[in-house]
Image (cartoon, rainbow, N blue to C red; front, side, top):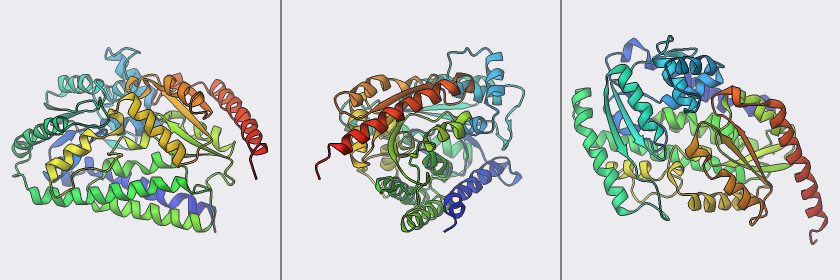
Length: 421
């Protein structure tokens, strides 16, 4: 079986959907529709989809800017506007794009200005300041859905009702801005497609448990993630993940591995360094290492079984908003990662800390210490950034990765020599 055929089909389908998303944002056909800006973690995009809004995700724009090697220019524009070096690189990149000289023009399309910004505040207070800065630039409407941090084992009934009531309060704003009355049946239909998409997505991630893993559950999964964020709640997203699952089944039948021969199985924590994505991936594929699981791709939808379904649309949206991994407390994250490490039978854990995202990186050193010590799982801590390539040092990162695998290779050989037959 041709390896390129096995490797590229789903990625090409994802690229096509991303391209269509940006074309439609700037299409004359949809020009009369209002534009809402949302954030991906704890997304409630389906509500706005039901009213016909054009939906913009600033974080996703920043990812594509970074992968198109335009991040530094946009960050410079952001810093010229007065945003300092300590501020999130996504914020500076987005403000540099939208309020700076590009005026929303990117290598992949023009981003429309917002009519409404909804801050779905999930684990990151920077969202609030980011939205305030955009509001100052564009004098648009702004609303907040304040999502409580998960302090205990799970969300409480108060948490759920608190978020549910805020979502209900958005409905009159949507009606007024869109000119359409709220249609609960339409929202149920959209959320039915969301549930189907999420079910397919979770099945996809479980393929990393197979040996050899038929895909890289970190580097491939982040490429497969875009339709989940951009097109969730549509038949297109459902169709895409069916394509991915068909491809994975084909790979399993052919005993295909993305690295040729799987020698190391890894759990990744943290976002990739998008501007150096290919180089970063090669550091691991050169060692025949596969990321079979990751925490990063679990921030766009709930990781746990939800109490409600699309038949109760506002409750379902509130559940999606309140149960993102990004919003969990430290111990809940630790237990979840430990379960992933066990279920996916990993040899080591890679924690990639991104300097400009404190909520994502906070506690990673403690997690590394726990896994390397009490849990006995070799762990590596790497430090760069998700968007600003100036913080990525190739030689230093490559040396640390090589040292880690040399030690891991010896550890695995030693363990094999003491295994009871």
